[in-house]
Amino acid sequence: MKQKPLKGTVSVPGDKSISHRALIFSTLLEGICEVKNCSQAVDCESTAECLSALGVRIDRERERGAVTKNVTVHGQGLASLKRPSTTLFAGNSGTTIRLLSGLLAGQPFDSVLDGDKSIRKRPMQRVTKPLAEMGASIEFLSTGNGHDSGEKLPVTGYAPYSIRGGNLTGRSFDLAVASAQVETAILLAGLQADGATTVNLPAPVRDHTRRMFQYLSVPLVHADERTLSVKRLTTPPKAKRIDVPADMSSAAFFMVAACLVEGSDLLLKDVGMNPGRLLALEVLKSMGAAISIENPRSFGLEPVADIRVKHEGRLKGASIGGAEIARGIDEIPILALAGALCQGEFTVSGAEELRHKESDRLEMITDNLKAAGADLEARQDGFVIRGQASLAGGSQWKTHEDHRLAMTGLIANLICQEKLDIEETDSIKISYPTFAMDLAYLTD
Ligand code: S3P
Image (cartoon, rainbow, N blue to C red; front, side, top):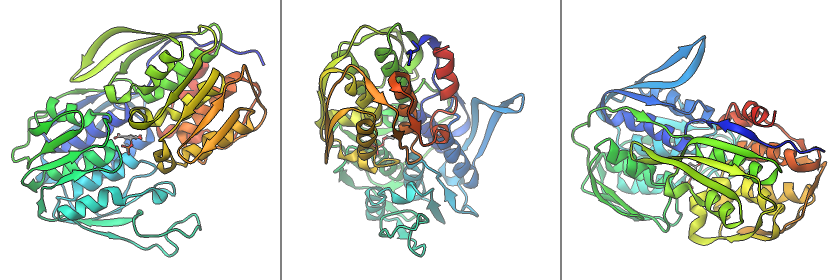
């Protein structure tokens, strides 16, 4: 198949992690909070809908019938949240269910949190346990066999669960997993607790929460690379406009594609350059990719830049593992594709956390790449790939309705000799609804 280079300029959608936080943190504030370039992904809609069910007024600008990227949240402080009359449905979004758990842990009413079949398989005790230790009452709700997939799975530790907020007491937590979601959930509870609440992380992660708290004047007791500490928020800070950078995790798909397809020359605009999100960019550069950072600036306290990527021959091998994995956890599937075509060996270790994402992403990516002809050895915590000059393709590409697997499949299709049979691409709307359109524009 003739490969089509990626050429031109693209602004990928607003950052999903920052959009969730912008919507949720607006409820801490007093006044009208404009969120510009908010992600229109289904995951962020799940957050907005849950907040609406909690009585938060959220307005979306409309243009010719469609919602735009500008969202207005009417913040009235945490005391204004109301008991929801329905189950709070997080859909596919781990960030929604975990962050809202922290928010609700301090609220004096009952709510029930649930999500789709993928959410129901993801571990929730990492947030519910610390929140219960702070004083929230959390109960896992049995749903017959627990899961609508028909599989027998333990019901304790998985959605759905109910939360009744309590009088919380601040505590110090040493997290076993380097998770920004867990950190943020605990801190949202900490803003409603007596005394200080401290989260110590085993490795640095995306620090959007610290940056947004500081930007919004939410007082911090302590902040460094691995520790964040807050106390009760007694007065809601004044609402402020939040500008959301483009999503590095979405940009990574086009970055890898441009590195792999001869003749590519791509400019990605306004991409968030949070230090906790830079692994993919750093790894590609270490593999010899021609990537340059242009026009560095900031949106609020988030660093932003334009990223130029040009194809420049085959990439070299790389080895990633340990603490750095957390800084690129969502990009490992697409990096694996770069690894499959490198000149040398591409190794990932210490990435077991990938088994607890929207799907078991280690199993999915290794199975798919092997089926497509990659020389790959799967391991419990990662994989080793001996790179090849080309990938045969012509195989089935499973997604398990995981958006990042589906997008990796579409990029793999650009370089495989024979077209892949991709299980589905509808899941892509979870993070990047216009992905196929942007890809078509860049490869036109
Ligand atoms: C996110 C943190 C990461 C990431 C997820 C979004 C966030 O999860 O995988 O897509 O917004 O905080 P963990 O913190 O659980 O690793």
